[in-house]
Length: 261
Image 1 (cartoon, rainbow, N blue to C red):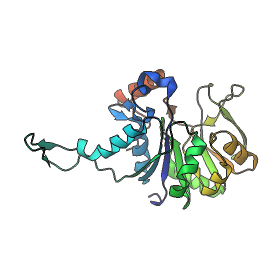
Image 2: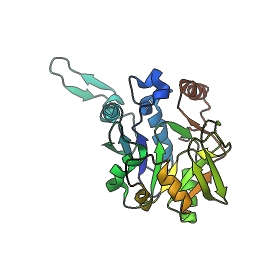
Image 3: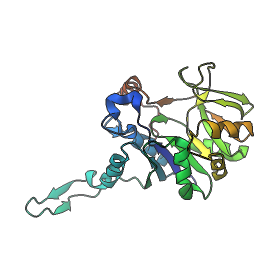
């Protein structure tokens, strides 16, 4: 069972311009796969490993994410509505049993990922925290990721995955990351797949509103504080309509590799 005190930060603030067919009307984390937002799929995976406290960094259309969780309990149960006086009576208990605590923090529509983390620091400064993006799924064994992170003793561990060549690249010295370059077109191989384990001291490298994936992670790598947990199995981001359709096809076929619950 996971350490229940470890929060999970999910970056949910981007505008998702490459998926504009969906994100013109909703934030990307609420785009649905199999009738559920991809955010729900991500949280279910973390919950499967005992991580049930979530800190969501909101931005673009963040009010919709707030509304989703405010209405989550009511929408998930049968009810009787008396139209004469507006009374609502539950017919049954909730159909949802997730033991989640969700902190919803508006970190600004145009804020970059590092700036969002800086704003969250008061909520995540007590010890190791987990971090991921609100638009990617994978069957990452989170217990092994956390054990790996603690054994290496660095300030941050990312999950390295093998992706399409349009992403960036990592260069290794054993398990230590020797060089970090986001979205490089000059390398092929392993890339940053998210699913981080992070110590609060890593946030000292975020000195202004910058991308977490740029100067802060590059500096962590240069100082030998950034490690990679290599994940050889399923990982997929949802950047484009093609990605979304691929994830939907896996779910509809009943073989979604990220479904761990």
